[in-house]
Length: 67
Image 1 (cartoon, helix red, strand yellow):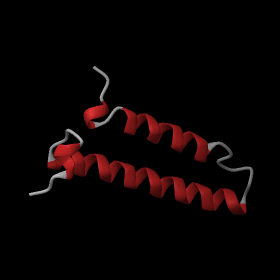
Image 2: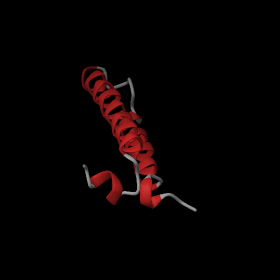
Image 3: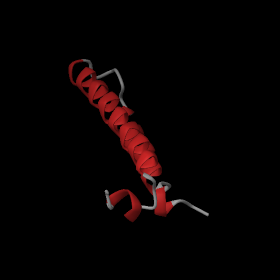
Image 4: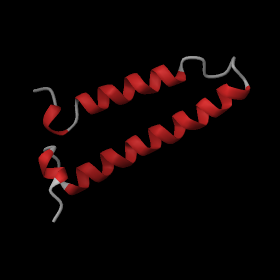
């Protein structure tokens, strides 16, 4: 049915869970960035931290998993 999950070495369910987790990370990061915009002393490193965490998740997902 869908070719993309197979192309990244995931089942449909694995891909759905992974994508929803990334969506949650983007949402949390966005909220923290908004708070930081109005109160700069809050969440000072959160954007960098979230980007690094997401990059690690992407680097270790599907076909990119470390053996």
